[in-house]
Image (cartoon, rainbow, N blue to C red; front, side):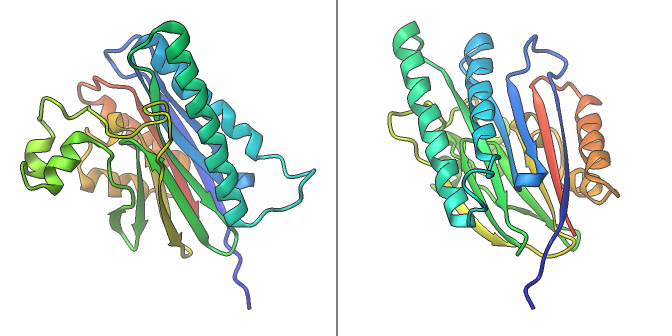
Amino acid sequence: MTRHLNWHSAACTHGGKVRECNEDGYFNHSPAGLWAVADGLGGYQNGDLASRMVIEALSSLTDTEDTGPLSLYQRQLALHQVLERVNRHLGCEKTLHGSQAIGSTVAALLLSPQGNAVCLWAGDSRCYLLRRRRLYQITQDHSLVQKLIEQRRISRREAGSHPQRHVLTRAIGGAPELALETVELELERGDRLLLCTDGLYRELGEEQMVAGLCLDTPGAAVTHLATEVLRGPATDNLTALAVFVS
């Protein structure tokens, strides 16, 4: 018998304690099984524009009245095409305004009732999976320090204080051709997923993240995680989006 999974989700974002503008954004659409977080790059106006363009573009993927239900593969292809259009638009913005830096990270999640899921990302926003109280990092950062770690030139401990820890190797708007990475997952009842920007995960330890995701509802989870970050210096914008599968 074909299984049918359900899910609930919640999200929150906060500007942190230092920055005047929140350049993060999120897309939370449980009925469509589509979620995403984005972290804008390029300073106050550019970063806000870039992340907003990413999030607003995703709304075109939630209306299936004219096309009927789509397969997960078709939805993945449509998501990729939408993000490619945003990548081209951001390239035009650079040309028009002479900007040296305008772009956005993205971590997006697609889920089907059969439990098949796809995560797509560019940059250092992340997707985590909590399964039976064990936390797995699904995405791998597209960043300079991640490359240095892979080359064994620095340790993970050193990466947290590296002077170039914010330098990305991929982003939407970062190059003429968009390079997204993709991971396919098979989810189970009881799984809990977290999409988040670096302003959240850089400030929390694994135990804190697990404790938040073990709370009863996704709303309680994201509120707890954000509150934990805001107990500290919270020098960056922060966004958390939780999806609980049942």
